[in-house]
Image (cartoon, rainbow, N blue to C red):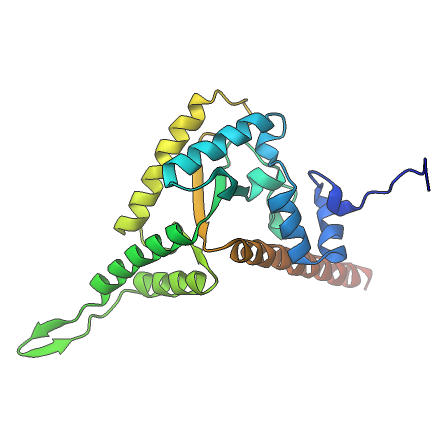
Length: 238
């Protein structure tokens, strides 16, 4: 009706409180929340400086040869608080990183191929007394192989899924170190950190699914915390 005040939903809330997040994850699908955060949201870290968010995206885009529209911010720098059940009350601070998500099939493929070079070197057999022997892989390497392949199957490449000595990981982080210096040059407010971190998604759909999985995990964590609280109340009542 004309003149009637429009009611907004919690999903339209720019930076929900901890209590509001508990309601949001129950009322909306993880995919809907992920779409909203990626497409209709100025990250908390740039809430008072949207123009500098555009500059930040340009810096990342130039460093990785992608379009600025393919650069997003996720994590606490996006939401304004940790999106982990036990830490939901922990607000974003200057000690946090700017977790950056880049969507690029070309970059994803390039980084994954370079990661395969590391796998080749780690799993290469050696000839001993005329016979090839397979290497005994350390637990750290086996764990990294699983994380790398699990993320890759979901269209995500994460540098922290690889051991620190891996060349492709080191090269990726070095790019972000340079970006961090550029961020300082933007003369951002005191609420904006300078350290930048990142990951790469093969497609926007993969990016949504990755963020949605984190939100779904948050929903389960909230339910688990609520269940423990209720059980504690019952024990106290007895």
